[in-house]
Image 1 (cartoon, rainbow, N blue to C red):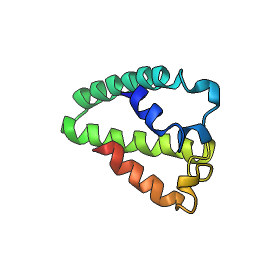
Image 2: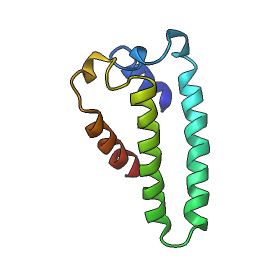
Image 3: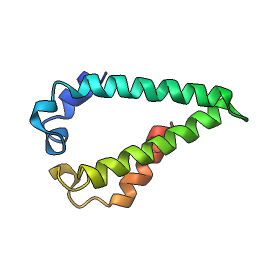
Image 4: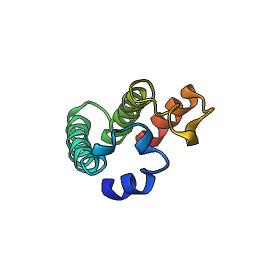
Length: 102
């Protein structure tokens, strides 16, 4: 999945925030990284008190917030790619919470 996503968006988005040499390593890094995060989220959802589905969505929202904070302020994802010029960083963060929660 990450190979397809990153190759689809490389020219108009990802090449502005990642070094060119990372183009072929990012799918592997993202695939393994998100798999580990998902396994942790499953474990936390099943072992926490309350509804596992609610916990999963809550953890997804937190993950989306943290990853997009890093992308926006660490990598410049809301300012470097031309497609993102003029976008409101706060709106991108709010979108990320709901995107990753669901």
